[in-house]
Image (tube, rainbow, N blue to C red; front, side, top):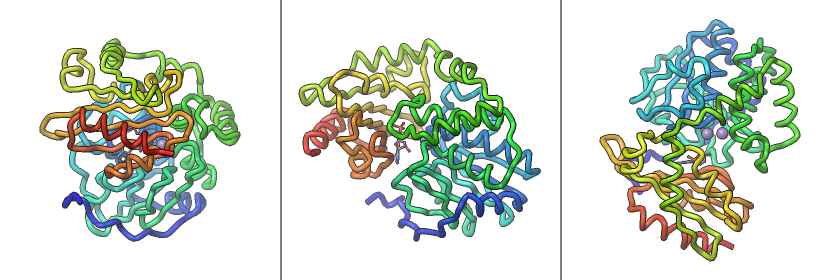
Length: 337
Ligand code: AMP
Ligand code: MN
Ligand code: MN
Protein backbone atom coordinates (compact mmCIF):
# COMPACT_ATOMS: atom_id res chain seq x y z
CA UNK A 1 0.00 0.00 0.00
CA UNK A 2 1.35 3.43 -0.91
CA UNK A 3 1.82 5.32 2.40
CA UNK A 4 0.63 8.54 0.72
CA UNK A 5 -2.83 7.15 0.08
CA UNK A 6 -5.35 8.27 2.71
CA UNK A 7 -8.01 5.83 3.93
CA UNK A 8 -11.12 5.70 1.74
CA UNK A 9 -13.56 8.23 3.18
CA UNK A 10 -16.98 7.08 4.22
CA UNK A 11 -19.55 7.41 1.48
CA UNK A 12 -21.43 10.69 1.83
CA UNK A 13 -25.01 11.67 1.16
CA UNK A 14 -26.58 11.05 -2.27
CA UNK A 15 -28.46 14.04 -3.67
CA UNK A 16 -30.64 14.86 -6.69
CA UNK A 17 -30.00 17.41 -9.45
CA UNK A 18 -32.72 19.57 -7.82
CA UNK A 19 -30.85 19.58 -4.50
CA UNK A 20 -27.56 20.49 -6.17
CA UNK A 21 -29.26 23.26 -8.16
CA UNK A 22 -30.81 24.70 -4.99
CA UNK A 23 -27.46 24.62 -3.23
CA UNK A 24 -25.66 26.19 -6.18
CA UNK A 25 -28.16 29.04 -6.36
CA UNK A 26 -27.50 29.86 -2.71
CA UNK A 27 -23.69 29.73 -2.90
CA UNK A 28 -21.38 32.64 -2.28
CA UNK A 29 -18.06 31.19 -3.40
CA UNK A 30 -17.43 28.05 -5.42
CA UNK A 31 -14.32 26.16 -6.48
CA UNK A 32 -14.64 23.71 -9.38
CA UNK A 33 -12.10 20.88 -9.58
CA UNK A 34 -11.58 18.23 -12.22
CA UNK A 35 -9.10 15.39 -12.66
CA UNK A 36 -5.45 15.66 -13.68
CA UNK A 37 -4.73 15.24 -17.40
CA UNK A 38 -8.20 16.60 -18.14
CA UNK A 39 -10.16 15.44 -21.19
CA UNK A 40 -13.01 17.10 -23.08
CA UNK A 41 -15.57 16.16 -20.46
CA UNK A 42 -13.41 17.47 -17.62
CA UNK A 43 -12.69 20.82 -19.28
CA UNK A 44 -16.22 21.06 -20.70
CA UNK A 45 -17.49 20.76 -17.12
CA UNK A 46 -15.08 23.41 -15.84
CA UNK A 47 -15.99 25.87 -18.60
CA UNK A 48 -19.76 25.33 -18.31
CA UNK A 49 -19.65 25.48 -14.50
CA UNK A 50 -17.66 28.75 -14.35
CA UNK A 51 -19.83 30.37 -17.01
CA UNK A 52 -22.97 29.37 -15.14
CA UNK A 53 -21.46 30.61 -11.85
CA UNK A 54 -20.98 34.00 -13.57
CA UNK A 55 -24.59 34.04 -14.64
CA UNK A 56 -25.70 33.20 -11.10
CA UNK A 57 -23.48 35.96 -9.71
CA UNK A 58 -21.18 33.64 -7.75
CA UNK A 59 -17.54 34.17 -6.98
CA UNK A 60 -15.90 31.25 -8.77
CA UNK A 61 -12.52 29.64 -9.36
CA UNK A 62 -11.37 26.37 -10.89
CA UNK A 63 -8.41 24.08 -10.23
CA UNK A 64 -6.80 21.18 -12.09
CA UNK A 65 -3.85 19.30 -10.50
CA UNK A 66 -0.48 19.16 -12.21
CA UNK A 67 1.34 21.56 -14.50
CA UNK A 68 1.11 19.80 -17.88
CA UNK A 69 -0.51 21.89 -20.61
CA UNK A 70 -4.13 21.10 -21.45
CA UNK A 71 -4.92 19.42 -24.78
CA UNK A 72 -4.95 22.14 -27.46
CA UNK A 73 -8.36 21.15 -28.78
CA UNK A 74 -10.10 22.37 -25.63
CA UNK A 75 -8.36 25.72 -25.23
CA UNK A 76 -11.12 27.49 -27.16
CA UNK A 77 -13.51 26.85 -24.26
CA UNK A 78 -14.15 30.08 -22.30
CA UNK A 79 -12.58 30.41 -18.82
CA UNK A 80 -10.27 27.40 -19.24
CA UNK A 81 -7.27 29.73 -19.54
CA UNK A 82 -7.74 31.00 -15.97
CA UNK A 83 -7.74 27.60 -14.26
CA UNK A 84 -5.41 27.34 -11.22
CA UNK A 85 -2.66 24.69 -11.39
CA UNK A 86 -0.05 23.14 -9.13
CA UNK A 87 -0.91 22.67 -5.47
CA UNK A 88 -4.59 22.87 -4.43
CA UNK A 89 -5.73 26.41 -3.59
CA UNK A 90 -6.79 27.60 -0.16
CA UNK A 91 -10.47 27.07 0.57
CA UNK A 92 -12.30 29.16 3.17
CA UNK A 93 -15.43 28.18 5.06
CA UNK A 94 -17.71 30.03 2.67
CA UNK A 95 -16.50 28.08 -0.36
CA UNK A 96 -18.13 24.91 -1.63
CA UNK A 97 -15.94 22.67 -3.76
CA UNK A 98 -17.58 21.08 -6.80
CA UNK A 99 -15.71 17.98 -7.92
CA UNK A 100 -16.57 17.39 -11.58
CA UNK A 101 -15.80 14.16 -13.48
CA UNK A 102 -13.47 13.06 -10.65
CA UNK A 103 -13.79 9.34 -9.97
CA UNK A 104 -11.28 9.52 -7.16
CA UNK A 105 -10.09 12.14 -4.71
CA UNK A 106 -6.49 11.17 -5.37
CA UNK A 107 -6.52 12.05 -9.08
CA UNK A 108 -7.92 15.46 -8.29
CA UNK A 109 -5.95 16.32 -5.13
CA UNK A 110 -9.36 16.60 -3.47
CA UNK A 111 -7.96 14.92 -0.36
CA UNK A 112 -5.48 17.79 0.09
CA UNK A 113 -8.13 20.48 0.52
CA UNK A 114 -8.49 22.29 3.81
CA UNK A 115 -10.07 20.28 6.60
CA UNK A 116 -13.82 20.75 6.71
CA UNK A 117 -14.17 21.78 3.04
CA UNK A 118 -17.59 20.74 1.73
CA UNK A 119 -17.32 18.79 -1.52
CA UNK A 120 -20.15 18.22 -3.96
CA UNK A 121 -19.16 15.23 -6.07
CA UNK A 122 -20.75 15.20 -9.54
CA UNK A 123 -19.63 12.30 -11.71
CA UNK A 124 -20.51 9.41 -14.03
CA UNK A 125 -17.71 6.93 -13.27
CA UNK A 126 -19.08 3.62 -12.01
CA UNK A 127 -16.22 3.26 -9.51
CA UNK A 128 -16.79 6.63 -7.82
CA UNK A 129 -16.93 5.82 -4.07
CA UNK A 130 -19.21 8.79 -3.21
CA UNK A 131 -16.39 10.55 -1.38
CA UNK A 132 -18.21 13.89 -1.31
CA UNK A 133 -20.24 15.28 1.55
CA UNK A 134 -22.90 15.45 -1.19
CA UNK A 135 -22.87 13.13 -4.20
CA UNK A 136 -24.71 13.32 -7.49
CA UNK A 137 -23.60 10.17 -9.30
CA UNK A 138 -25.07 8.61 -12.41
CA UNK A 139 -23.03 5.88 -14.08
CA UNK A 140 -25.59 5.72 -16.90
CA UNK A 141 -24.87 9.33 -17.89
CA UNK A 142 -22.79 9.54 -21.08
CA UNK A 143 -20.68 12.40 -19.69
CA UNK A 144 -20.40 14.44 -16.53
CA UNK A 145 -21.52 17.45 -18.59
CA UNK A 146 -24.82 15.54 -19.05
CA UNK A 147 -25.27 15.46 -15.26
CA UNK A 148 -24.34 19.13 -15.02
CA UNK A 149 -26.91 19.86 -17.71
CA UNK A 150 -29.53 18.05 -15.58
CA UNK A 151 -28.56 20.29 -12.64
CA UNK A 152 -28.85 23.46 -14.72
CA UNK A 153 -32.24 22.38 -16.03
CA UNK A 154 -33.48 21.34 -12.59
CA UNK A 155 -32.63 24.83 -11.34
CA UNK A 156 -34.21 26.52 -14.35
CA UNK A 157 -30.86 28.29 -14.84
CA UNK A 158 -30.36 30.51 -17.89
CA UNK A 159 -28.49 28.74 -20.71
CA UNK A 160 -26.53 30.50 -23.39
CA UNK A 161 -24.58 29.39 -26.42
CA UNK A 162 -21.21 29.30 -24.61
CA UNK A 163 -22.52 27.16 -21.75
CA UNK A 164 -24.31 24.87 -24.21
CA UNK A 165 -21.13 24.53 -26.27
CA UNK A 166 -19.03 23.58 -23.23
CA UNK A 167 -21.62 20.96 -22.21
CA UNK A 168 -21.69 19.66 -25.78
CA UNK A 169 -17.88 19.28 -25.90
CA UNK A 170 -18.04 16.93 -22.88
CA UNK A 171 -20.85 14.98 -24.48
CA UNK A 172 -19.35 14.62 -27.94
CA UNK A 173 -15.89 13.63 -26.68
CA UNK A 174 -16.97 11.17 -23.95
CA UNK A 175 -19.33 9.39 -26.36
CA UNK A 176 -16.66 9.17 -29.09
CA UNK A 177 -18.74 11.45 -31.31
CA UNK A 178 -21.94 9.58 -30.42
CA UNK A 179 -20.58 6.15 -31.26
CA UNK A 180 -19.46 4.49 -28.02
CA UNK A 181 -21.76 2.14 -26.15
CA UNK A 182 -22.67 4.95 -23.69
CA UNK A 183 -24.45 6.80 -26.51
CA UNK A 184 -28.00 6.62 -25.23
CA UNK A 185 -31.06 8.09 -26.90
CA UNK A 186 -30.90 10.62 -24.06
CA UNK A 187 -27.42 11.64 -25.24
CA UNK A 188 -28.82 12.41 -28.68
CA UNK A 189 -31.74 14.30 -27.15
CA UNK A 190 -29.35 16.39 -25.08
CA UNK A 191 -27.28 17.13 -28.19
CA UNK A 192 -30.42 18.23 -30.02
CA UNK A 193 -31.43 20.52 -27.16
CA UNK A 194 -27.97 22.05 -26.98
CA UNK A 195 -28.03 22.57 -30.73
CA UNK A 196 -31.32 24.41 -30.25
CA UNK A 197 -29.48 26.65 -27.77
CA UNK A 198 -27.19 27.64 -30.64
CA UNK A 199 -24.28 25.18 -30.53
CA UNK A 200 -22.48 25.20 -33.87
CA UNK A 201 -21.81 21.48 -34.22
CA UNK A 202 -19.49 21.89 -37.18
CA UNK A 203 -17.47 24.64 -35.46
CA UNK A 204 -16.97 22.34 -32.45
CA UNK A 205 -15.93 19.52 -34.80
CA UNK A 206 -13.35 21.75 -36.43
CA UNK A 207 -11.98 22.95 -33.07
CA UNK A 208 -11.86 19.53 -31.43
CA UNK A 209 -11.09 17.13 -34.27
CA UNK A 210 -9.73 19.15 -37.18
CA UNK A 211 -7.21 21.46 -35.54
CA UNK A 212 -4.55 18.89 -34.78
CA UNK A 213 -1.07 20.33 -34.23
CA UNK A 214 1.49 18.60 -36.44
CA UNK A 215 3.51 17.61 -33.34
CA UNK A 216 0.57 15.52 -32.19
CA UNK A 217 0.44 13.56 -35.45
CA UNK A 218 4.19 13.03 -35.25
CA UNK A 219 3.67 11.63 -31.75
CA UNK A 220 1.11 9.23 -33.21
CA UNK A 221 3.69 8.15 -35.76
CA UNK A 222 6.10 7.25 -32.96
CA UNK A 223 3.42 5.36 -31.06
CA UNK A 224 2.70 3.36 -34.23
CA UNK A 225 6.43 2.63 -34.59
CA UNK A 226 6.54 1.19 -31.05
CA UNK A 227 3.37 -0.81 -31.52
CA UNK A 228 3.33 -4.48 -30.60
CA UNK A 229 0.60 -6.94 -31.45
CA UNK A 230 0.26 -9.68 -28.85
CA UNK A 231 -2.05 -12.58 -27.98
CA UNK A 232 -2.67 -13.39 -31.61
CA UNK A 233 -3.97 -9.89 -32.32
CA UNK A 234 -6.31 -9.54 -29.34
CA UNK A 235 -3.98 -7.06 -27.63
CA UNK A 236 -2.21 -4.03 -29.05
CA UNK A 237 0.29 -2.23 -26.82
CA UNK A 238 2.48 0.74 -27.44
CA UNK A 239 4.43 3.31 -25.49
CA UNK A 240 5.79 6.84 -25.62
CA UNK A 241 8.87 7.96 -23.71
CA UNK A 242 10.46 11.34 -22.91
CA UNK A 243 12.50 11.04 -26.09
CA UNK A 244 9.35 10.83 -28.22
CA UNK A 245 7.98 14.01 -26.69
CA UNK A 246 11.34 15.79 -27.01
CA UNK A 247 11.88 14.80 -30.65
CA UNK A 248 8.38 15.74 -31.80
CA UNK A 249 8.05 18.80 -29.61
CA UNK A 250 4.70 17.44 -28.41
CA UNK A 251 3.56 17.80 -24.81
CA UNK A 252 1.87 15.16 -22.69
CA UNK A 253 -1.66 16.41 -23.33
CA UNK A 254 -1.09 15.82 -27.03
CA UNK A 255 -1.04 12.06 -26.47
CA UNK A 256 -4.79 12.15 -25.89
CA UNK A 257 -6.58 10.27 -28.68
CA UNK A 258 -3.63 8.10 -29.71
CA UNK A 259 -5.16 5.17 -27.86
CA UNK A 260 -8.25 5.56 -30.06
CA UNK A 261 -6.14 4.87 -33.15
CA UNK A 262 -4.62 1.77 -31.55
CA UNK A 263 -7.99 0.29 -30.69
CA UNK A 264 -9.25 0.68 -34.26
CA UNK A 265 -7.04 -2.17 -35.42
CA UNK A 266 -8.97 -5.16 -36.70
CA UNK A 267 -9.37 -8.00 -34.21
CA UNK A 268 -8.12 -6.00 -31.19
CA UNK A 269 -10.00 -6.58 -27.91
CA UNK A 270 -7.76 -4.50 -25.67
CA UNK A 271 -5.52 -1.55 -26.50
CA UNK A 272 -2.93 -0.16 -24.10
CA UNK A 273 -0.76 2.93 -24.33
CA UNK A 274 2.00 3.52 -21.80
CA UNK A 275 3.36 7.02 -21.33
CA UNK A 276 6.65 7.12 -19.54
CA UNK A 277 6.97 10.36 -17.64
CA UNK A 278 10.11 11.69 -16.08
CA UNK A 279 10.82 14.97 -14.44
CA UNK A 280 10.45 16.74 -11.11
CA UNK A 281 6.71 16.09 -10.94
CA UNK A 282 6.42 12.52 -12.19
CA UNK A 283 8.87 9.69 -12.54
CA UNK A 284 6.35 7.05 -13.45
CA UNK A 285 4.22 5.60 -16.24
CA UNK A 286 0.66 6.56 -17.06
CA UNK A 287 -1.19 3.66 -18.65
CA UNK A 288 -4.35 4.04 -20.74
CA UNK A 289 -6.49 0.97 -21.36
CA UNK A 290 -9.38 0.48 -23.78
CA UNK A 291 -11.62 -2.53 -24.32
CA UNK A 292 -13.22 -2.60 -27.76
CA UNK A 293 -16.15 -4.95 -27.18
CA UNK A 294 -16.39 -4.82 -23.37
CA UNK A 295 -15.46 -8.50 -23.04
CA UNK A 296 -12.45 -7.50 -20.95
CA UNK A 297 -13.27 -5.15 -18.05
CA UNK A 298 -10.33 -2.74 -18.12
CA UNK A 299 -11.61 -0.84 -15.06
CA UNK A 300 -11.06 -4.01 -13.01
CA UNK A 301 -7.61 -4.40 -14.53
CA UNK A 302 -6.63 -0.78 -13.78
CA UNK A 303 -8.02 -1.15 -10.27
CA UNK A 304 -5.47 -3.85 -9.48
CA UNK A 305 -2.70 -1.27 -9.79
CA UNK A 306 -4.50 1.57 -8.04
CA UNK A 307 -6.32 3.09 -11.03
CA UNK A 308 -9.86 2.90 -12.28
CA UNK A 309 -12.31 4.15 -14.89
CA UNK A 310 -15.03 2.57 -16.96
CA UNK A 311 -15.45 -1.01 -18.26
CA UNK A 312 -14.20 0.05 -21.70
CA UNK A 313 -11.89 2.95 -20.81
CA UNK A 314 -9.63 2.99 -17.79
CA UNK A 315 -6.18 3.96 -16.64
CA UNK A 316 -3.63 3.90 -13.86
CA UNK A 317 -0.27 5.34 -12.87
CA UNK A 318 2.58 3.05 -11.88
CA UNK A 319 6.25 3.29 -11.04
CA UNK A 320 7.33 0.38 -13.22
CA UNK A 321 9.23 -0.01 -16.48
CA UNK A 322 7.50 0.01 -19.87
CA UNK A 323 8.59 -3.58 -20.50
CA UNK A 324 7.20 -4.81 -17.19
CA UNK A 325 3.91 -3.00 -17.78
CA UNK A 326 3.52 -4.44 -21.30
CA UNK A 327 3.96 -7.95 -19.93
CA UNK A 328 1.61 -7.25 -17.03
CA UNK A 329 -1.14 -6.06 -19.37
CA UNK A 330 -0.61 -9.11 -21.59
CA UNK A 331 -0.91 -11.47 -18.63
CA UNK A 332 -4.05 -9.73 -17.40
CA UNK A 333 -5.74 -9.92 -20.79
CA UNK A 334 -4.71 -13.56 -21.21
CA UNK A 335 -6.25 -14.37 -17.82
CA UNK A 336 -9.51 -12.53 -18.62
CA UNK A 337 -12.55 -14.59 -19.49
P1 AMP B 1 -7.41 7.97 -20.04
O1 AMP B 1 -6.80 6.70 -20.50
O2 AMP B 1 -6.46 8.85 -19.29
O3 AMP B 1 -8.12 8.67 -21.16
O4 AMP B 1 -8.51 7.59 -18.98
C1 AMP B 1 -9.58 6.74 -19.31
C2 AMP B 1 -10.47 6.56 -18.13
O5 AMP B 1 -9.76 5.97 -17.04
C3 AMP B 1 -11.07 7.84 -17.58
O6 AMP B 1 -12.42 7.59 -17.30
C4 AMP B 1 -10.31 8.11 -16.32
O7 AMP B 1 -11.11 8.70 -15.36
C5 AMP B 1 -9.83 6.76 -15.86
N1 AMP B 1 -8.48 6.87 -15.32
C6 AMP B 1 -7.36 7.17 -16.02
N2 AMP B 1 -6.28 7.20 -15.22
C7 AMP B 1 -6.71 6.92 -13.97
C8 AMP B 1 -6.07 6.80 -12.68
N3 AMP B 1 -4.77 6.98 -12.51
N4 AMP B 1 -6.86 6.50 -11.62
C9 AMP B 1 -8.19 6.31 -11.78
N5 AMP B 1 -8.84 6.40 -12.95
C10 AMP B 1 -8.13 6.69 -14.04
MN1 MN C 1 -12.73 12.61 -17.77
MN1 MN D 1 -16.24 11.83 -18.21
